[in-house]
Image (cartoon, rainbow, N blue to C red; front, top):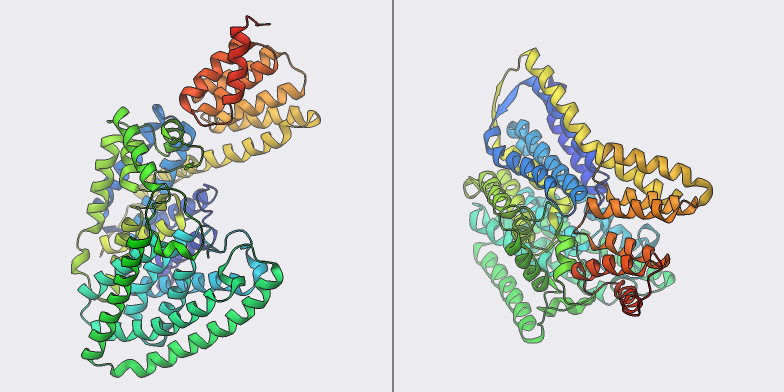
Length: 592
């Protein structure tokens, strides 16, 4: 019976560990397994324990999933819209699993704190042992999440858990994440962490003990970070492997000494007075204000920003304001339904004014849902977040630490692409589900369990089919470039289209394979034309079709397709071939 009661908690922690360490970044490879694991856990928990109350608060999120799936019908990138609906479905399933954790919220907080501690150790270890992660090009701490900004967001998750835990364990967790946070060079992550800390100290009833824990962690962390910035092999890009090994060893020693100092300070600062706490918080606030003032004086602009330490004193948006304007431009032309979930890449190509500001999302979640899913999707997202945030300000202790995860996620998502990272979304939605649930359970009839199992199978197939399609399409692309394996490429491309008919890339793979097999130009071009019909808003397929027609000296056809390309992307690589096709047509040449 105890094992049965522990099933939801154990499943949630296993899935969170998988998301944190193997979430795959913006890729979709982990989604079927995260979603499948959540489905199994939900069905088994419902059958064995019953259904918890509170599911109504997840209804807006479920409606958002349905709307994202609906946008496939008119999406500029229907294949990506399917994957984006699947991603949101996984977050819904994780929140649904969280409902069963309502009576185990404290255990969830402890387990999540332990997982985040393991992530911090793994991240800092990559600076000690250079072979664990290649930082030769960009020194910003990013492993194991894959991107520094999302790793920094995990620090904002961990700090409230550390301040709730207090003692040596809490101080060490806060210490590790404060060091890691600065080494990510993430300004958005630091601001989010400050916002979360401010909320914690505003709402927490034991501010004095929290201040003692934070002080015990922050002072040695500041010293360690100062030493790290003096070690080129730890904080500077372009360093040799030998330099990174030597400086990594020094950093490991300093990191260990700092951890010992944080633990010792946590034991000694239990007698911290209220006056001392106020002084410490005042000094910290003044330091933060000084950094902001320097940034305002020295920083500015919207252009590209380097990945060095000078980021801390710059207010450049690093193209974000440009992307926000592009999102608004796209929204104005598709107010109601948007361009389709996950399709901002096409909007970016259409409205950009240089070849540098490439992105897949506008780095602002409300604008993203507005431009991709229209007013309907934006309203559903607002309703979903409001339903999950309800009651946050009334939480205390471990519940407050869990309740601050979703606000941290939402604050950081105003300047980044957090919805695309299961590693940061999964903890936020599991915690939100646990807080939305109620301990009371309602028994489920055997017939109801069978219906739930059938629905789970259908949902898992919806998660699995795009994954299979992308897998087979990638294999088809590799095989299509070799004439000996071209027949296999055709078979794999057809197999990919059989499970995901929205994969336009599979038609291009068939064109490559047909060309390798010596098929007629008419047959090859028909495949390119099929890709264009599948995603007419995507300039890439117009470019491929136009370039192929130009290679066959079909100048008028090439001009027609490349003209459509330039209308969808003015700063791409096909402008030169467009000019060539136009000149040939103007000269009266057309051999087709």
